[in-house]
Image (cartoon, rainbow over all chains, first blue to last red; front, side, top):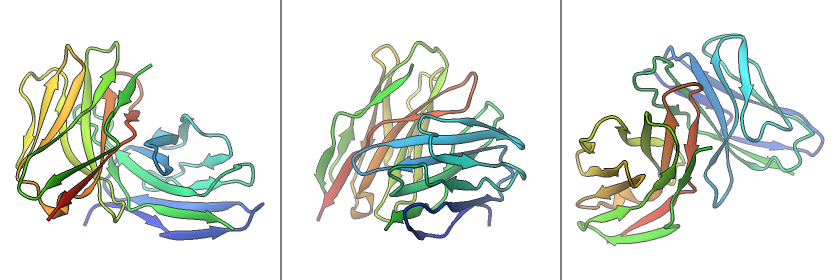
Length: 114
Length: 115
């Protein structure tokens, strides 16, 4: 079955540690995205990538880093520089055909800083 | 810059009745897409319906339909024959068709369907 997987589902981090959230898709989509969701707020874009080996900052990129070495994978690293990392993180992907660039989402990762 | 506003933080509806969720947006673009996504308690984001701005006809998907008013920049979602499984957060989203493929999301409306 085609889809987007995120792992782990729950992640706990001590302050000062870097952690990496995984996102994999087998939809053959060119574009991938990372969002952060906080209570009472919509989704805010962290980073996005429209092609392998290229990515751009979104609205709240500070304290995060990404890589896009493979089309299928777009891991997100939450660094110790992120002051308030506890949140729900969603990964998405889409085509870039310009016809119907609907984003499809993974199940999310809940990150908690202890 | 584009903005998306959902002015109803919470709504409730009786099972089998109809409810309308509001969304307004601001843009200077002429071509764009609008979306409604559903996020149930599982937190999986699910596409409900999509509307291309160049199409005058309102999109429909089974019990879900939209009222797209381009001049007024309004994009409301109507859910007919509401079911308990419709209980979820609903997000309106905007995407322009030129340049980057970035979505702008509203803050969401929490809908509760009552038995």
